[in-house]
Amino acid sequence: MKKILIALSLFAVVGTASAQWHHHHRPYYGPTVVYRDNWVAPLILGGIAGAVIANQSQQSVVVQQPPVVVQQSPVYVQRQPVCTEWKEIQQPDGTIYRERSCTQ
Image (cartoon, rainbow, N blue to C red):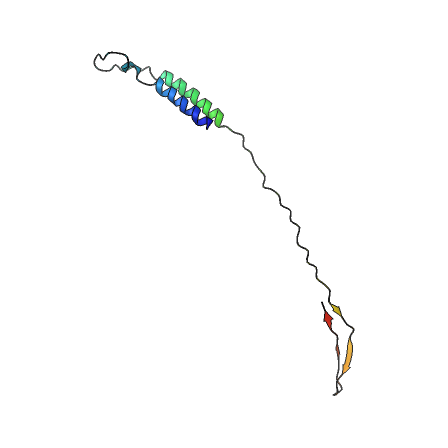
């Protein structure tokens, strides 16, 4: 906001310096006389205004690193199955098979 106000005030000064002052407070004597030396003051004031604006617009560059988020990986606990001892069972036809039961 401060830069905008400074720029507007400097442009107002430059604008009034380059105004055609010879039309005011003088009687009209015919065709307007063109003065070719009216560019010096606006040039100087414009250069000063440009230098002030350029110096204010140079700001330091701030590089902000993104935050580092460290998350612990989830721990999955697998329970080992609890099994009974093997049992051998003989079928009536004479075959033998083994079995056991497991729970988690």
